[in-house]
Image (cartoon, rainbow, N blue to C red; front, side, top):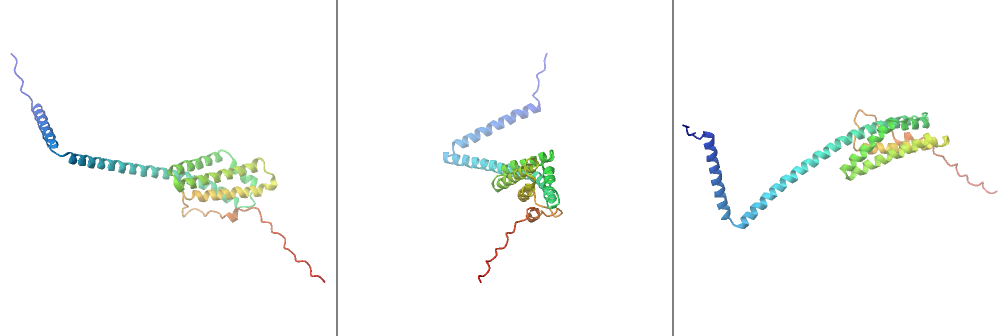
Length: 218
C-alpha cells in the first residue's frame, strides 16, 4: 500500500507565484484595453525616445574612449619619431659634419625602417582622428619622405659639389616635419629646444657685387 505524497512548500510557492503572475497579467491587459490609443502611442513614443537616448549616450562614450585610445597611441609614435629626427637635426647644426656622413647615417637600415614605421603610424592614427589632425599628420609624413629622398640622393647619385645644397634642403624638410609632430607630442620642459632653420643652412647666400656708378664725364 503506497502513501500519497504531500506537495512540498517549494512547489506550493511556485504554484502561488504563477497564479499571482497570471492574475497581474490579466489585470494589466484589462487596463490597457480601456486606455485610449493616443495614450498608448504617447507611452510607446516616450519609451522609444528613452531607449534611443541611452543608445546615443553609449555610442558617444564609446567614441570618446576610442578617440582617446587613438590619441595615446599617436602621441607615442609621434614622440619616438620626433626624438629620432631631432638627433639628425642637432648633428646637422655642426657644419663640420660631412653631408655625406649625415645622409649615410640617416639612410642606414634598420634605423630608417624604424623611423619610417613611426611616421606611418602617425599618418594612420591621425587619419583616424580626422580634421586638422589628419592634415598635420599628412604633412609630417610628406616631410619625412622628402628628407629621405634628398639624403638618399646624396648617398646614391648627387655630385659632391651639391652635397651641401641637398643636405640643407633635407634638414629643412625634416625641421618642418618635427614642428608638425609637436602637435601630437608636445615638447617637455626637460627637452632641448628645436634648432632654428638658420642653424641648419649650409649654403652661404651669394652676395652680388655692388653696382658701380659710371665715372663722371670730364
